[in-house]
Image (cartoon, rainbow, N blue to C red; front, side, top):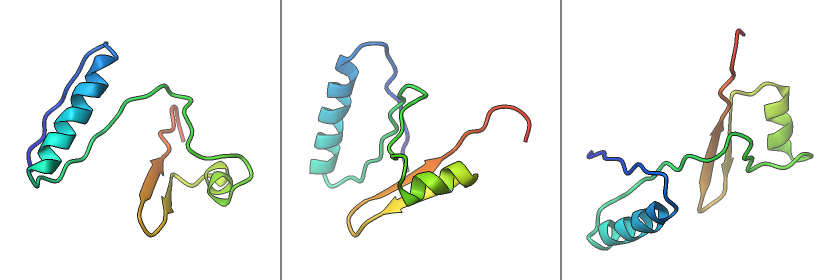
Length: 80
């Protein structure tokens, strides 16, 4: 496995990463990315089962379908 990072404060780095991923994928390489976002982003909606599980205290919840998986991990701040 090879790991590298692209860091910057400009919006154009997302386009650079997209083009880089496309090129690496076209060459037959498997790629993964991590995208930092603001702290209050939430992929879940109130009222769903996974939202309720997180509210109940689950540290990790995975949303999974036949074609996609999303793992959400809570990062708690302060004492437990």
